[in-house]
Length: 205
Image 1 (cartoon, rainbow, N blue to C red):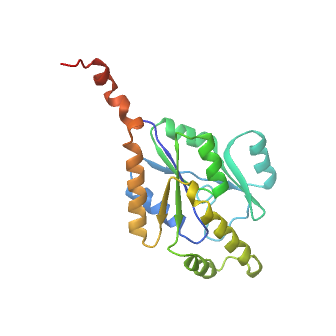
Image 2: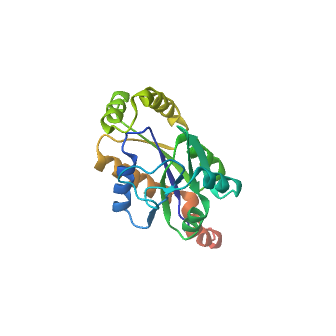
Image 3: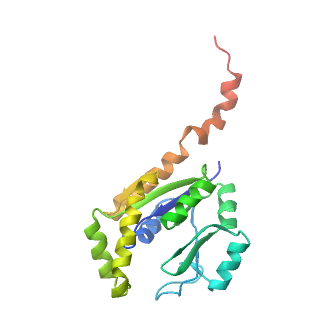
């Protein structure tokens, strides 16, 4: 059975990375897709684990080579997903989870309509999103309103996703995503080949 690509999006400050780490800890045969970005590395981040940090010139070369599943420019920096590792994992039956901006997620769904499952993660209210962004302390005062407007727009796009998860409790939210992953594996189109031979060979009595 082939793997699936679970694409997770949501506003900054809703805990997507922590949530995905919890999901990976709970489920076997799941791999986190590492994105590439042209933005500077932040304190605590690790190149090759948090992101592949590359120059803007190198990123544009990846675009020219069609080596990215998707890419987008956000707040002056490129973000994108290397394509080859994802194709290899899915072909080997490994599920892949990834954190991608809304624009990129919708592009992925168009490019991989059968493999990609879109999950939108958000907080219980927009006021909580605002408070979390302020508490993080990594947004310059002049950019805060821009981030909040971006968050409002992202929430308006949730209607295009296959699932919505409210991250007000980490354990509950991670259980919901694990349930989504299991449900996708149990869909008829994923398992019909297991009984197709019996169906075609059976004779009505």
